[in-house]
Length: 416
Length: 113
Image (cartoon, rainbow over all chains, first blue to last red; front, side, top):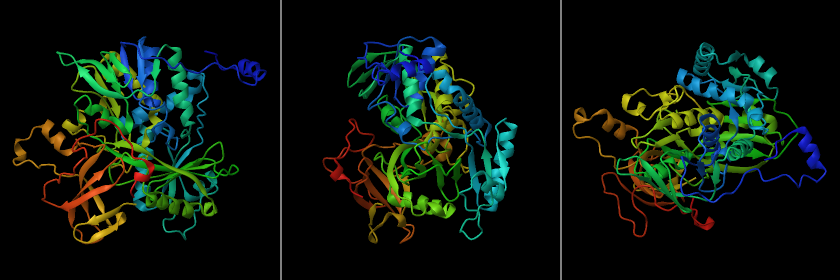
């Protein structure tokens, strides 16, 4: 594996960059592994990376039904922030932001993490009170979050329309300056490259058909479309398809999967300096380094695996965008797509052991999993390696649905 | 946007409706006898079917009545709508019940919106 450095970039320039080696192998699955991760998105690849790097497991496979990073990792709007209301949420998302800050160096791969600031708008008195509560709660948790007046919002994000003549005028906003965006594909590729270098087998086009148990009830192996793999540890990190995969181990999950849409516009010159989110009018917008406006829309109301949503959902968001940023009214949208997001009742993720020893699950990230990629992978790997949930992950266990200790970010009006 | 046939009013656009999630979940006859595991199962655990599922819909901005629908969650095609209280109809040739065994996506022309 060639390390990326200024020297190597210059050296490869002489061969028109044709002599770079493949970034990861394409191995045939072996007969057995110490641990198998099901799902080759950012969370799954990251889990394999940290299992190999920090916990010394050497025989690890990531099995992926399609291609790596082809699910929600490649379909999200790349927003990163950690200004959540509850302690448990702030804990895991802040852990993640801290890893984001050093991820490019860690992986020797530029994930283009850009802490350009995430501004969450308030449009009514309730929004203002709720945002203030978030700001104070975050400060107690050591998470940066500050309140801006409408004029300060305008100064931070000049395209924003703060006039009183719109249906939902901007009454202020909560700003997390360390929030921002990163390049989504690079996260999957960086973790894949790093994991591969540590000996992890990344097996693509390999669908899991069955998860087997031995006589004692613990995990013994998985049947896949590319043969049987013996293993005593399985981590399911399958996002929208978690229910489908877990059913192959005979387990039901407290999940519902919905299509979540996003759009990008035609590319334009740099105009948008930050990320703006508005939960009230359903508008999420930033500008990519290519110049496209990246816009997040909402979910459909019904369970679906179609990876496309209703046009009225996207139109609703575009109406809000056009009101908040009237200068974008004549822009054309280039692409519109959907991803299948697995949501829990309390809109908090599940990182948990299951009733089957050796079977672990990391899912339920709903509409906001991208930001959590490094933190989720890091604590999930530790939990799998030690067979005990990491303290940051422990509150997100499946047990909370029995004990009633929900982490109710849904009631905290979270949008991701 | 889905075109949904309300059994009372006929075909109407999706924005008139509210989706109520999985249908035919049996409520406990004696709730006081349920333990925490059973309550969790009832309140939070769902089939989340990939394939044909039965779900409840409310014609919120129409007759405001509830009904059930059979819908394929891969193609989003609604196969049948039927009255509340009726048993789930059998649809020949379609996988019934929980998440399907093999994953199959519809051909592009098959999508029905």
